[in-house]
Image (cartoon, rainbow, N blue to C red; front, side):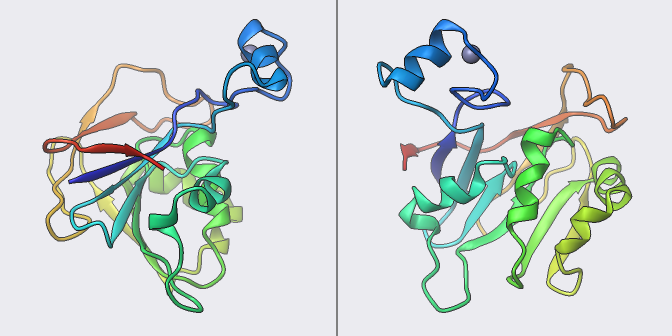
Length: 178
Ligand SMILES: [Zn+2]
């Protein structure tokens, strides 16, 4: 299994637009590297990829990761997106994944309800983006050779959503930075 760490910062990124803490100041000054918001891409074959959580930085993250670049005029190796909760940090990037390229969107029923209630997410063409419902503690395969198992997390839900937060277990990882 291949894992690309697309971003590792907390919500808001590093530096965060309205933060003057020491880390953000160092990132602005170039003393430490800036970081985009947390997201990873996972693949069984290195050709087809699943993105776990669509961060607001996804456009820059795809740009920085050659494995995720299109290989034809209108195409993407991103075949699926899995969102683990309805945090803005994890769903806002879905708005970037419009433009008429299909993929499977996996989320729990509660998360899908949140997306459905926010009509701006209708920019994802329902004829092309298949919204697939997953259940906690029930393994599913977003791509051949990949098996993910969502599990409940104790972290708090986003303030606008009652969706249960979840994480994922996968088989052995082989991380690589883009
Ligand atoms: Zn800061």
